[in-house]
Image (cartoon, rainbow, N blue to C red):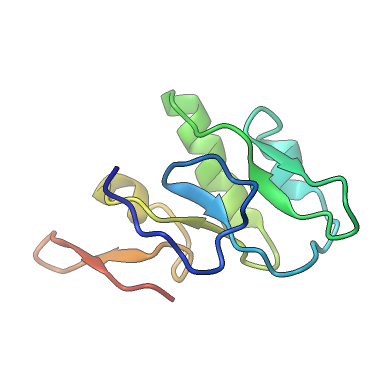
Length: 110
């Protein structure tokens, strides 16, 4: 799998390009989980950490994963893959790569 593995990736995430960063807690807004309940859950410990329990596969699931990233108020939901069409839809700073002006995907972890 050609993805960036963030050093603070939450251990609960299933393998794949969509993931959350373990920030030690969650803000509790539940917006991402409401948008993509079939992809995202919270841990049941005191961290209440959001994580991907399923990677998106369909166009609809990918769209909801992107929406969850873009709505997250604490910016801990990320995309670490290399698909340019997804990177350009993800809010700036929430993807580990960028798409250069020439259209090349370049690692730019924030």
